[in-house]
Image 1 (cartoon, rainbow, N blue to C red):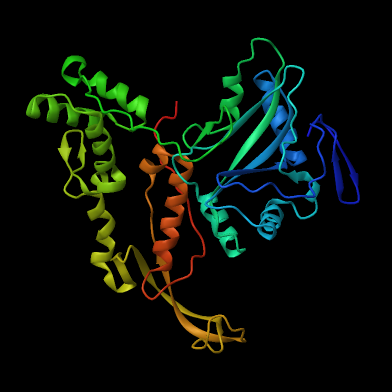
Image 2 (cartoon, helix red, strand yellow):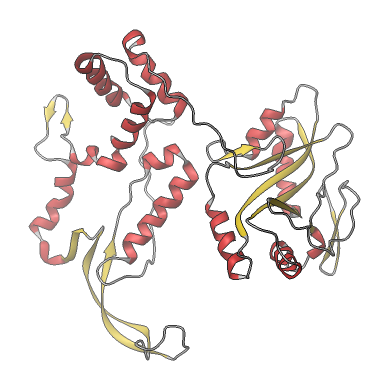
Length: 381
């Protein structure tokens, strides 16, 4: 925390103002609903955050991470020790405990942010798997939130500015009162009609901007023709969301598979046909092309390490030896503009994961070695 630390051969003593607390010798009390385990933030995280916070008129007094653990049934004493051990830093067990390290005082307050509760995060899925492997089957969900003890440097500094600085509103949210339960039982928002007939294209533009639907001018022109000229009615918000998903380039590949019109002249081939043209003219250079979610170029012989006894149990140790084998070069491409536009980080995760999955499942299986990221954008201003 704060501006400096004292180091004593691996033991670090934070110098920021924190609440007095007993040593974390005992794990948290069991609960059938939710446990909160707190861990002090690293020094470099606090220093970097302090610089950013000063830009919006805030001073970060301290920070910590909170692990919000949901249980299906209580833990026994031995399991409590396991759970506490799981969230401790290896060399700093005293920096983790069942009570908060932060103490609001002198105009400072705590701001907590973390993943949106409607969806289980990928981090939680991994954490729950680890808990189950450690003999903690009662753990059903674990979400990690970040807590900041902040103090406005000037009276006009708004808390919203600092909140926007420390979380991604697409995938995260502010927890005004912490997390009491993941069971929200929230009622779904009611669908409404979009006043397209009354307000024209502006109604679709406003909805797209508000809900992040990613409509471009061609989308809006097309939906105007469908609802105004053909169906002669206003669309519902449900229909607009469904059209945004179903008609996206990610789902239909209309951009690569559609007609290309340049200066009013229809081009003789689609982009997909241009891409496939080299294979049609020289098919002998490829062993897999445009199927199996990937492709493979005819490769070369290469000496590599292989298990000496590959037919035996995969869990058993064994020697490797050098063998010469034919290696084809596999290639796959993933277009992910639409998913990344809706949710940047999950969109990027599924995009990269999908590319790796497609590559590894090509033919009889392959190894993912490298990736190239290409970005084609319009005017970013």
